[in-house]
Length: 348
Image (tube, rainbow, N blue to C red; front, side, top):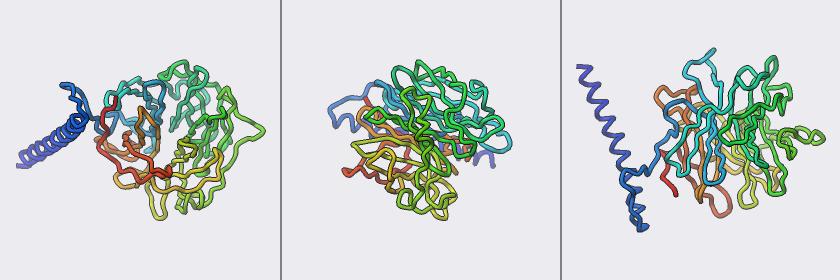
């Protein structure tokens, strides 16, 4: 009797999934025909979240280069060690249309970093002068957290370790680097949990201005709103720094008052170094896991927010999955809260 009931439940679940996929495809086909276009037979028109379905991925870092969007992620291992985040390598995926994704496999790992022993956490990549740089937080042997740099001639690696930490303050704050090159050529590397800090990178991208040193951003409620993290503000970790239309954005994982799970929030500034002004909630905690991590980019005229959930089978706070949502900016540069979604449509 129970077996028959289970079969019925599975059959109904499968039918719901198939109907949902059919409906989404039908909507996209309708939109194409309104534009005077016809869909190609058997063409994939919609990619359902999570983006990657064969492994657990987290901490998405999109990077647009030419006509391709590269997506760097961390990798949550199936088997946990000490019931904690077990992460040993970084992965890369790429797309030209947001629905067809190529898996480039492992592009950098702890095995490549002789001075590190664990915690291959949230990365970000950038290109300068024909070289590609992947900034990654790792646990230093007999130390705290530090920021490593992988260098490659290709966005898909393999990346080679710099040989020593770029940033190593001897504490646990040096995680989640985000990198940006401003219009005047000055590169910035922001990072930190629970404090937000930055360094001004030199043009070689593997050293920073030691005279300026590591700068600590004032952790005020005006900048990051009142919250429940260690600084008393909502800022938690996972900063994502970029610029759009002369406005600088700092998107981050946040802890609201009385909240245990992270939501996404953002602050803005007219200067790359602040002062920062809190902008609002970007994505709520609902439907997520303990952590979240933002990655934002513009690609072929569309704006995307990458984030992670626990939506894959077996998902949990230690087994996450990267997702994406399209969004729009308001005329004043503000961003309305972005709901977690089913996926995104194909673009040209």
